[in-house]
Length: 330
Image 1: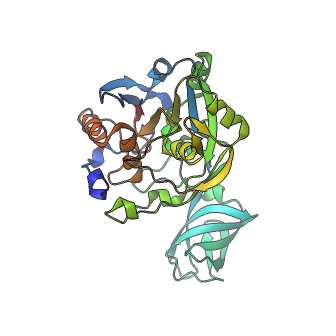
Image 2: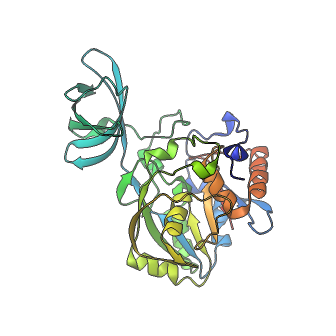
Image 3: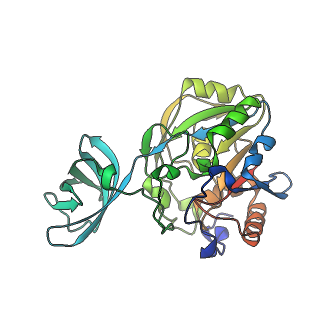
């Protein structure tokens, strides 16, 4: 199972959720038993029944800080810019389309904001100086398969998002509410936080058929000393929320169910054949075909069980991708 084509399936466009549900916790939850392959259809609020005293739930607390801007050049041509990070006040690293004609010194108007291209980085990204607050006129950088504008920016943030730095949300966590997290704590479930800032490369497709040749993009991640202690002292099960939390835990693993505190840039690529060292299960959304995320969950439950579960999800008309329903593999 080391070919990209092994992770292909037909995804009807009608199943791709375009907007989040009004109530974060109103989504459906598919529980896939990783040992037996049995699928159970539940409501997401059932997580308070599925997790138990002694378990640790690990969440990625990164916050989306990227902003998408639309503007015009003095010639009238249109420009789209994705501001990835501020390197100093008013100076941003950005992906720009079309980028080749915007040389250093070029100017762009993003609505009421004036911008100047200061330089071009080696990877084609630009350094752009903008006077004013881009977030005031910009849009949330939603994935390319979502075509509906988001009415409430906070619906593309988890309720526990704190440190800014992501170009995309860790969407498996979008279902959790403060009330559900409080119920879990009251039931004896520990909540541990890690940080992985999601790169824009998360949207880029795998370009090789032989997965052994695929190289993951590097993403900055961190586990603090206190959070590592919570994870390492877990008497029950360690359950990660989303593939980014999984990547952080497994990249920082030092042994069975043990992680080190600190920060790193991880390029870990998890696919069948990988033996998980830290997690016992994970929450995840339903992923696109031929993606590293689909290979990762296949390593946890087995490819056949995952693909059978996906067929069941299609038959039951689950909502797929970022704003879709949830799956618990445990």
